[in-house]
View 1: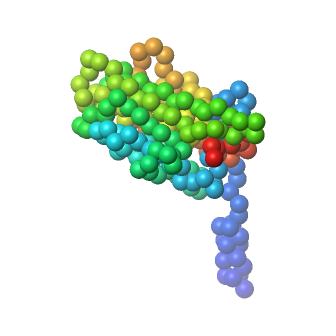
View 2: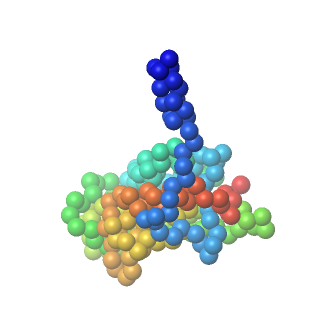
View 3: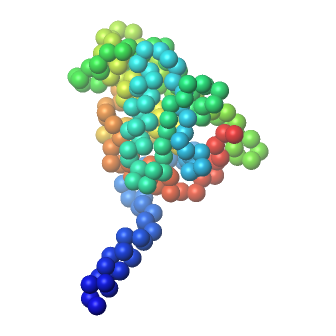
Length: 208
């Protein structure tokens, strides 16, 4: 009788509910106390990337980097061909279709994410807008590397990570002045923060 009991015990452990992630080793993600993340019923989040150079592949790379962090599929995203049906719209001056420079990061581009206004029901009224801009004086490969990092960073804001990390090892670090983002991908601290966010009850709702 010992063997069936042991198997039953293992099955009970395997089927237990996952525990919510701890906030230890995370940074802030709210906006003045308001919290947002994409609900399960709105997945996959629809991203539209202007068909300019390498931009669609950069956006897909950013989506994949964030989706790969989640153990239970709390976030997934997909590229769509029509901006009218998008949840997140990504625009850029251009995006050189060249391999990214493997050298030290340089401030060859910038990015900004516009968070939509909300209505009386705390629902966003329109899609998120991400804008990537190229700065002069750099090689296409340096620009490509900068855009690759910055696209992941700005996509993080569109996921609901509204605050910047104080740690330059994180992709969500918020450098000041002409300092580039230095991380190539989300860090463990980015992952922990995103997990906590996606297990926190939101106060803001996605756009219609």
